[in-house]
Length: 493
Image (cartoon, rainbow, N blue to C red; front, side, top):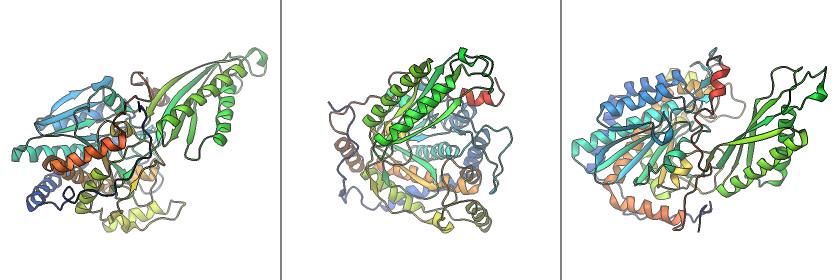
């Protein structure tokens, strides 16, 4: 029984010409109307996104951000289910009936430990604990815009079909989507769409890295570090021994593996032997099984470190996510719609902003004009780089996504430069483009049954008939307090 299907699958290079036929004049007219709907409300959507940028709420604490995003579909007549799958800031908004169910996902959590004003020069905001360095303020809002446009079209035309918006919290390490998948909230969805902030425009069908993480907590005995150190047992020593062994692992894991960690607690004063220390660690690999195996090895290292330092250890799995299962059929349709929408043009003022941003980069930078270009469509079966909890969704529902140039070309995610650009009209314009592509793709899926059938057929072939989904994070509840230490560090309750 295939519980974790292999990452490598045959590339489906030939897709039926009938399935990918050019849209009819009626379809073109409908998409023009969808685009006009979004453009007419672009300022309102941009204001919402920038309010969420200002809030910069971290995972599972996105209370105001979630309410802002729920308010628009609620006002439009969507049925809202809030606090789903044990997550207070998660929601599902549905409208329609009959026909296929097309899902659109939106994120809205910020990254802790990084913040920046809207300036193109380094300018942290004093006292702010987080920033939208991954563009999720745009992601969530753009997805809302797309869902509203699809609803408007369905309602005006009386077309059977359902559009469902998934508000997914805590993507940054909290794996919010996994709990929604585990709860069966996506079981009846015909296809799932998503997008992400980026420095370029692309709808390539690309995989990602599976990822498993945990908090490793060591307990020792405090003592005066000079007066009676023999009476103490340092929890920090245990963390350091643990990290030494983890670093030795790097020689013996495959080149595609990634391991990284931070010490989230290591003591408060040099003259006090710490009786508590904590390490937060990620392990990644293109295949879920290998990520799980590596994590089990990390647990052994932690147990050994505790034994060697006469401390105790317990660990908590924080999240576990699959790699993305690509779907070429769906990706190509999304790519065609991205080409229809086009890239992001800059004003003269935005060009000057971009030049200042690029002057802070260490690496060679692409042309600013590349923000207007659409990258060629590619299929990348083996993941590299980052991870996303969209991966779990893609193993239970045919899924495709795109990226638009919401950041200055050459910008890395999780950087202050991404925070800055995402707080400007550069980010807003990329978001509006993404909303149109999502809406157009949903239209294609609802009105072209042969396309949806081809998407489903490819999904089954790639995943395997005997696949059984088992979340890497097991049966744990959502870690609603996994960012609590970040908030406490600000001096709050």
